[in-house]
Length: 68
Image 1: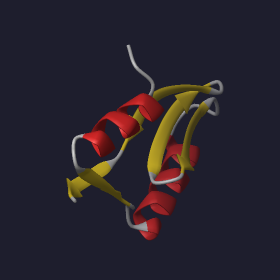
Image 2: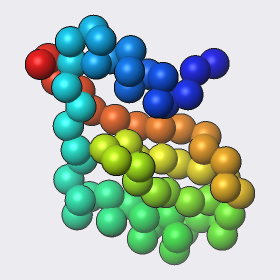
Image 3: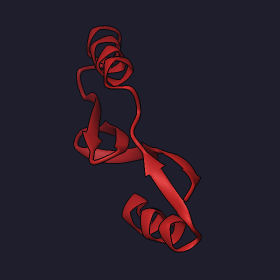
């Protein structure tokens, strides 16, 4: 497995540009996860990545890319 940072570098080298998710949507997701899910689940942002984690460990990293 590769980290999301490694995928970021790989995608940039392939000629893609990362775009940011809508901040209102990300905030809505954060609120929903905090309200509806176990307290150890978390959604956070790192740059233009949206991270989903459990007990401080990143489980999934989401991003959006367009051709540069």
